[in-house]
Image (cartoon, one colour):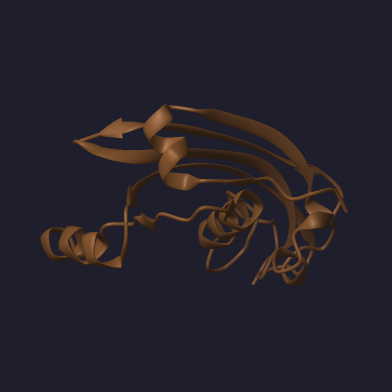
Length: 142
């Protein structure tokens, strides 16, 4: 297992830095529970910047997962393209103020060593279909 990339989230966002890479699906322990195969890679890209006067991290994730169709129980390939923008709050108090104005805000609290692969894995897990199944039907006759 290679070293996991970490970054200072607030500094990264304010500086407008960029980080990208690829990592094998096998590196994601929590994701392993839902995959039929851990073959393949995840491509990710993080970009810092400002939006609405707040420092943000933009995350893009692309991968293809092998899941089990819950209709026919056969494997199928699920393409995932995730794009998310995370405002980065200096601390919990600032985050609480932001959430008071926007209760659905998906933001991060600044971390000096944000684990990039944990953030990537979280977004893949959140993007999984509730009921995995072949798109357009699997041909199983009820």
